[in-house]
Length: 224
Length: 254
Ligand code: FES
Image 1: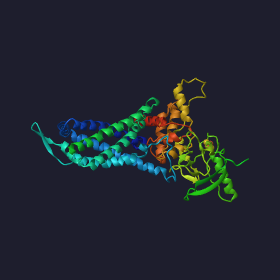
Image 2: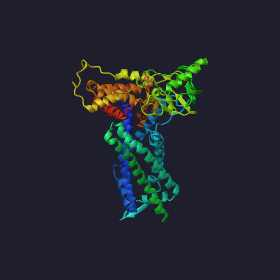
Image 3: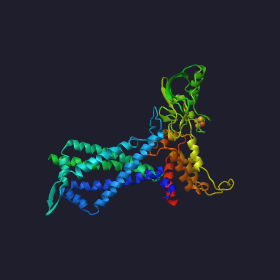
Image 4: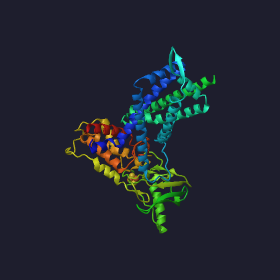
């Protein structure tokens, strides 16, 4: 790669487009993850079999590796961009206010919600994916009883509250991130802008609310 | 003239001797400000008092005082050009304030645009970006006959909207990231949308964005504070256009 080419692909706009692309990927992932997990409402068996199908797929390691790379790319580049942004201001304002016609709470807090999501994800994977291992037998097949792990984990109302709070944070992050990704790729049209911004917020709210159902459902199961 | 309606104000103003010394906020009291005066006339009034007292007047940029040159550049109570939309500092009037108000006045803040003195910043960085590509460098002939070149109404209007940028840098000042994307994208758009500028649009967007990054401006996070603060109402669809043109141009470039 020539020097100019290197410079071109390390340009602010390209870095942002990589963050946008990986972000969009994780928006899609959220939908898949949610739809799959909602099987828990159908029956413990459906949920456990779904989880088993995922982990027993031979491609799972490759998929997990790719997702980890995409995730870390998103985080590392976003942090780098944020650091550059802080540096670009130089001396800070004595008083700085939003006009009320542009920035929102969602856009102002992207780095913070991002960091919170990162922390949540580490805990989420440790506590559930690598949480207590139970087994269950369906038609002679012994598989992991992830349902039991979930119910046990969410028996503690603090864990339920933590998950609900985390999903709120995800909702805030995605409601700015989703439309923002389109803008970063250059999609902006007066006819669709209003729709896109509303869609982002509604998408974020639906996904966040959908995921909140899971800990609440598990808690109620545990209480019975 | 009666003094009914005259206001007494408290001002907090950034004072800085020169580029090498550190500045600080200084408090002033200014009495008898007419609600009909413009914001800059209010500072003129303060300066007259300061000069009378033998003090150094507050340095600030201004030229046309009618909203077209882009020289005036004040951060007023935390907002670029004050609270009004599509209004330059020189077009802001004191009737927007009340007797007894405290007004905080600061210079634009961005590392590539350092403070020279008090409220004056060095905006050479914008010139550097223009030199990197903000021009048409091919022979496009002499002035064409009206309607001689078929240009769609839509593009003509978009190009004119982008070209209404007065280069004041309120976008950079208001941006939470001190990004210059609105300015650069307005310049990129004004050329790219017309046939004379279209020919070189790929090279132009690459060069101008590279220069912008090199100068150390921040990265856009689509907060749209720039659009909200732009005295000419330039909107962020220009930034979207620049984003896609940059991507296309950098893919095409090899
Ligand atoms: S002084 Fe010219 S725009 Fe304000």
